[in-house]
Amino acid sequence: MEALKLKIFDVLTEKIAVSQFENWLYSSEYINQKIKADSLFFNVININYREAKSIKELKEITASIFTDEELLVVKLLQNCIKIKNAEASKNIKKSVVGIISDFDYCTELNPFWEFYDVYNSYEYFEDEYTSEKDIDIKLKGIAISVITKFESAKSIEESIELLKQIEENSTEQKNNLNSTDSSLKNTVNEKEYTFIQKIFAFFKKI
Image (cartoon, rainbow, N blue to C red; front, side):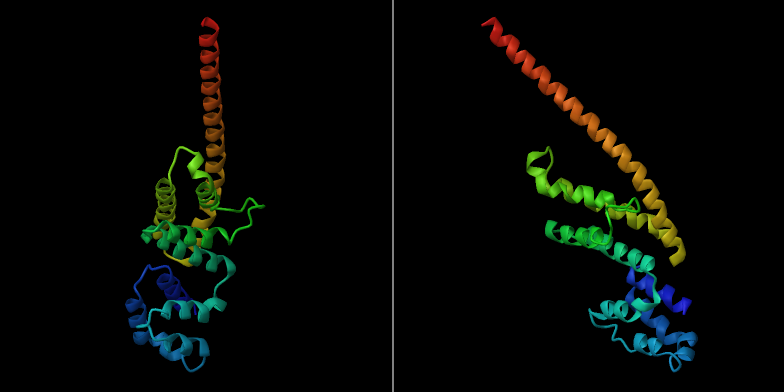
């Protein structure tokens, strides 16, 4: 089962092409041995991998063999790939929502606070020194960073460990970002105060 599980994980996260997965299925002695004893194997090999919906069907059929953490990694990577390849802002937003909807932001175990934080910028970007395009670029950058981190994983277990590392790094980065953001706000307030003082001094001279 582990051999099949790893191959399914790889094709769901686009580490291997659908055609590669299909060729492995039909040439695997392991699958041929198990197909009569386990209906799951039969259902997997019975999917028409020429159809666009094949990956969705594969995920639905095999969801029971993955843990919640493993499914979380699969969904994370699928959405990051969509963000990376998306051209329209609405498609980027849709995929980010697909990521942040999986997390409880009341807990500290949230590796994707950065997606959440940047995504919220869409609501007030007109009042900030940024644009919708800038936000899209930031989200794409986050997605590419996540994909790159997972490229080195040789197993599902390694992917889970990488997810935990991202959680730890994200917490540290978030604290640094909040500190930087606070400093920037203070700098802006000081500049505004200085500007007001100069105006007041100017009118006193008149």
